Image 1 (cartoon, rainbow, N blue to C red):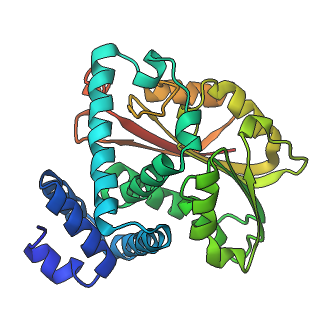
Image 2 (cartoon, one colour):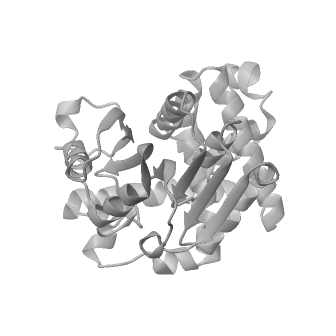
Image 3 (cartoon, rainbow, N blue to C red):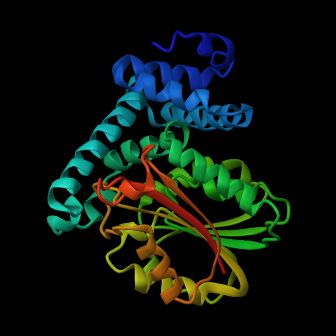
Amino acid sequence: MLDTHLVKNKIRKYKNLYIISRLICKKNPLQEKRIIKIFLGQNNQYFLDSEKICKEIISLKNKLGLKLLDVANFYNNFCFETIKEQIFLKKKKTYKAIYEKNNNLELYSSEKKMIKYLIALMLTQVFWKSHVKIINWYKNNVKNYRIRNFLEIGAGHSLLAKILLSKDVVKEADICDISRLSIKFSKFILRKEILKKNINFIKKDFFSLQMKKKYDFIIMGEVIEHVINPNKFLRKVKLLLRKTGKVFISTCANCGQKDHLYHFKKISEIRSLLKKNSFRIESELVSPSEDICEKFWQKEMIAINYCAILS
């Protein structure tokens, strides 16, 4: 699998990316066309960044006693579950977790499930076009900000925090997540930065977080769709932000996942919620998951990723 001219001349030198992508395609040949399409549209920086992510995943695999086959299966199963959730959404017009009145506590408290979830989520930063676009957009937008301290809410894999911590001017960070396993992952991903910066890891539900300090920057990467009341969430975020501070937010519309508890039906609903909470959208990116004309997005219930810098 992936034994193409492209792979031979470009991918093979990125050892970890090649190993993982090849195994994913071997276990699910339907992935090959999609992954090659992603590779064809990227520059050298994408491959360098993706190699770093895949190297971290293989290091995590070794630390957790997993096999490479496990990593490939985690990603393939995540993609399959995503398709099932989108089918449910189109049939019922809402997310399965909302329809069944689920919460995410069982998922977030299960180390076994969170390992699968977070490793797969890291790989979407490599193999999902819309996620690749968002992380690149984020890097380009934060590179000129003078940020002394920041808060990351819903750390997950902390790849966004890692980008900020690479800036010399950043001296302090608070990383908050309700999942013990997410905090453990973040500590591993940021292990080198921990030696140089003042990083505080907080295992807590954000709604119960009590902080007196204000932040120059707040990261909310794919968070508000995971809470029942994003309006209340944003009100609390606003209280923690300096007057001159910025917020990075990413979320989605019509994007079915097993842990999505709030359903934005269109991007305009996200913008309205932000403006309702007195946030100003300085810049934004709208990235559909499929190459379909915008006028069909809502009718076809296409998953749309969204991110913005707010003040």
